[in-house]
Image (cartoon, rainbow over all chains, first blue to last red; front, top):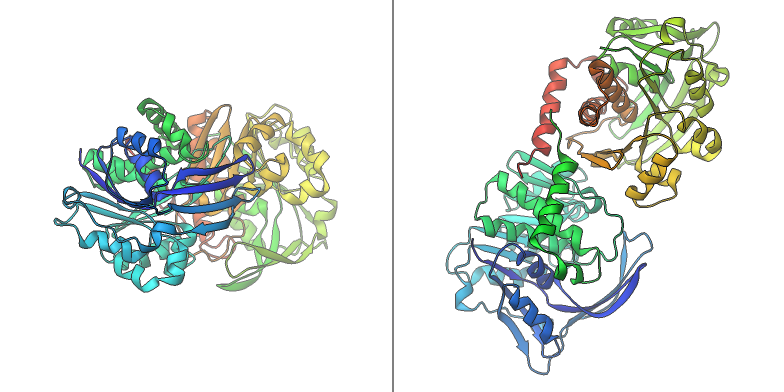
Length: 305
Length: 305
């Protein structure tokens, strides 16, 4: 088992969905990645920034799960990153109601010495320059660097994004983002263009339609489980990424066959997180729950041809 | 190998897509179903209606492929069903430019005696009453009756549609239609409701996202191949249905495992038809082309967990 290093946000969210609302719930990309990845591998070394207003019980629980918080900077008197959003009735779209960067505004990640030789690195959704500064600080070349990003950075920081893309092995984005980044409608053409930008492995998330994995001329299509009820989609993508990278670090195998397995583990993790608000559902799952859901994927996809 | 009976339209289409246009091309649900199904099983007994304006060479070719045209009524002096449509630039939507029912307006299908004991029946997209009249004429209970329909019939003939649904084993519709029919957004809930309406087997087509198969508490998710170029999506659904039912008739096996295989064969057939206008591509494929594409599905879906 290898360690996993992850950068991302640790935030408070207010979330409104047709199924209810929560205020100041623990969230953020680093939080979701850590909750998923620690189910599969330890330690998960976190790089983030919070104010001293953050929930200490929650952080202690993360530690118990196998997260290393030495790389989480705590700003005295600072306020943690805050986001509020409301999902549409069909749960497909959402509106951002409020964003307060707070301590995140001046975030300059500094990796503790123990993090600088880690083999698996997950760059959660943040500005491409901040993601790049993590790679700068690595003392040995990681076996696999994965990057998550979003349309926001394509809109305002495309050049920086293109620079960091040259330095990573895996890009994890959704279908809309793949089309925006490549300026191609066909996902096949989009994938070919994006792979030329740097990441030799591309994962395109399609929400309820599953995910596609591209590596060289090989393609894998993973379905999504059909869920009776989605309570809160927030963090599904981060949780997928955390499960994916957690599985790879735990098995220390980056073959195409194992990348496919990692996609299924990531998808299984994402299928849990949406069942309740924030990371609540992730706090209750066991390894046997995860294996059970991976078994559902096997049934859903299995065909003897 | 069992025979397959199929009802549907035999039409002339004018089709405009971003890749070009064709006029008066041979099309219609029965045509597409026959072109796909005859690749896998013979005979495919067609029930349809045309005018004496239809292309005799095309009909002779269909016969050579294993279609039985005894159930195709030819109206002296009549004009064949005609449809014209234009696809949007993104190929996702289309506008109907013209529809001329012509001989289809007074279509009352009469099954030749040789058709009335056929085990596999495909009711292509037509009015639910016309579909029902085929079942009325069967002298033995078929092993499997599948029905295709569309939102148009839900809008204007929902009661008739619900009646015929009680009499069929398989319903093949797309995701939008499943949501309209069930009044549920979740496809899982939609499937549960639709199965209560009659068909114990439900296939939900999701276009570029593949297809879902529901049977009891079992679900199978099939991906779609990623195609470099879609020239003309017309008939993809009918071709899928033809491949699906052709495979089932050829293997004479309606187990869940075989239904899954049939979905892959249907999907493979649909991946060919969109590569050119009308049925042009279907006229050139061989069994080895089909097996090759089924092999692509195996690679696309295969994961060892």
